[in-house]
Image 1: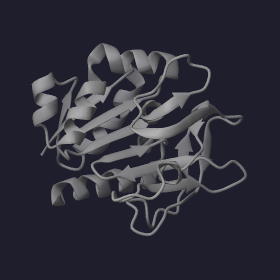
Image 2: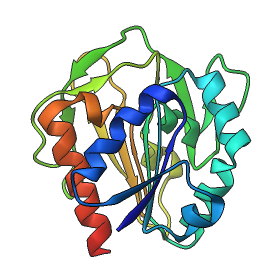
Image 3: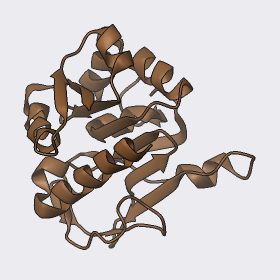
Image 4: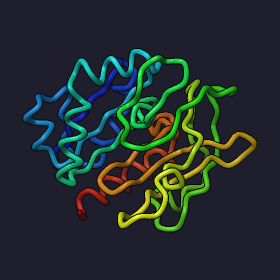
Length: 203
């Protein structure tokens, strides 16, 4: 199994070994053809959101995400890169990719280990250890609520438990996004990556 792996900043490369330990071949900075042909695609970032959106556009990742999702091909977006999937991002001056409606807003707290409350059927079900959320922005509104009722299956959204309420993850068909960093979340992060890979292999 091949995974096209895009790290939008150098520190985000730390996540690659999590996938390699599950027996997959990680294609770092793949070509367009490799990214479209791979069984799955991962986009991850630790960077601030202004640079992040420029990175999406400069590398053509936005178009690759659209192409893969149109064909039902798995895409995983992690870390600060998840914010780019929403329509609006506070304080950046640029719109996101619009995969989901809603806004990403500035957070008060930073660099926290927080527990989550996954819904039934989520990839994150059974995860009890806290996950690492380092970012100054967070998506706070469940995209399933904003999308309303319709013929399509609504996204599964996992929220953070605690005084500050925001999204930890969204699972929406072929598109999965984690707002936390699996590589800094210890055993829980490894479990989640392993479950996602198993899901891709079974699809």
